[in-house]
Length: 173
Image (tube, rainbow, N blue to C red; front, side, top):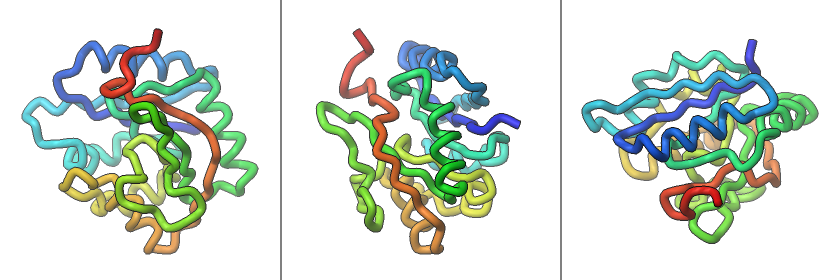
């Protein structure tokens, strides 16, 4: 079984999607990459709920089509980190959005606007059990992660930069 499944919802951004896919393919450890195209514009959160069972790894991460992983060791390092932390329900990490790093609301209850779709990985059993908690609003990712917090899931805060948002930072040099 693959340790990490990366779920990428996409909607009419083929150039950015190719950069995203290349960053996943560059991982040194095997990764399942599930790309789901939104052909009718239903939105990211409905797409996640509708396709929640298509991932098979021990952990699941959503990587938006306009985001890239910053290095090829992320998947291998995540597995090591998760095992050393006794396989927490949720692993939170940082992303670069514009010129700032998303802090992922370090070591406290998740805060709206401090959680990005791509700044956490969730153990698959938790992912499946809480699929209905993805909100339909723009902050649907926060709704999901906050529901895990209020359900008493065990969070682990990993001080690691994991992704860059290309829509605001631009393609890699």
